[in-house]
Length: 395
Ligand SMILES: Cc1ncc(COP(=O)(O)O)c(C=O)c1O
Image (cartoon, rainbow, N blue to C red; front, side, top):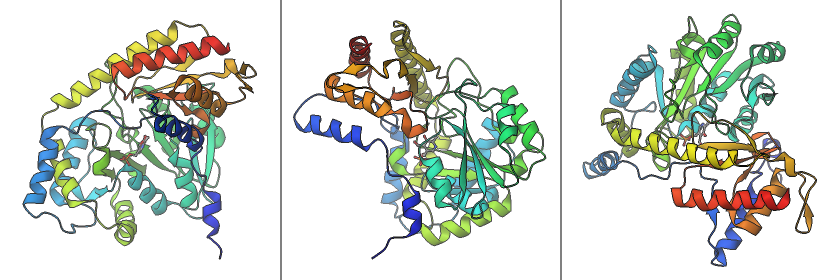
């Protein structure tokens, strides 16, 4: 019996090898410092959780409208105006089971088979695979020489007759880089007259440091008509398990996304929608506390990395990751093995120092590893000490 062709086009997780090693060690009772987390290490704020509980107690446990409950879409429209100065109506918003679903909905709604999607690298792991699931071709642009950001020149060089969309992600996972207002404005100038959809993933919007301000490319002149703005509750509100994300876009795109979503997941969880509504209406104190904690941790790791001459890294001004260049160890012997790539390095450090990182190859950059600072200060201190020890030993 055969499986569908599309399955062979989608890559399985490249990080499995390292994860398996970590699990093996844990099973032996060894303390493993896991710096791979893609989610905040905080509880969902209590007032949000209580809204979910109340929804259950009140029997709000049935199907809702495909696009999401009207009061949540209205609250999202208000949020987009308040925080981002973007003028959307509730009808231009669709709530999904996580931003991950919102992005796939968007790609399925705008791509025809064989059309190209521009994707700056390093990129979030799911983008290339989602593009392929939607029948598109990822056109990956390496930004290692341009401070991990897509430049105007690089963008112009990669636009072709077949380009149908581009994915931008600021603050970025895995690098943490944040596009400035002028950088986005310059990209908008190139894209304004093109027949290209801009999928702008802004899910780390609230986790931003150094008093920076988040800008959406949809906010520049005439750009709102070309943009599909993606956001969600997972990262800002520490609600990964609640699975609520959303997209804001011109009406016809939202209608198309709704048509698709209606036939495979219907609405996002009714209970989680009520919790998300509470998140938008509630106090920002805990959100700000999480943001500040991430910034303190970012500063700590930076000092640690700067204590050695052999690390270079993307300076994270947002999100909760460090993307560290470890290529200086390539070609060096570590135990019985010579380190050749990011998987070798991550595996070696996991096995011998019990600190787990994500190999950069998963994000399209094999000279790097990603470590997450969504971990406690104690774990970060032990983890960093061991990571430095590992580097000192191999170098
Ligand atoms: C850049 C980026 N976009 C989207 C998502 C998906 O988030 P959600 O939990 O809302 O599906 C993630 C999660 O890791 C992410 O890092």
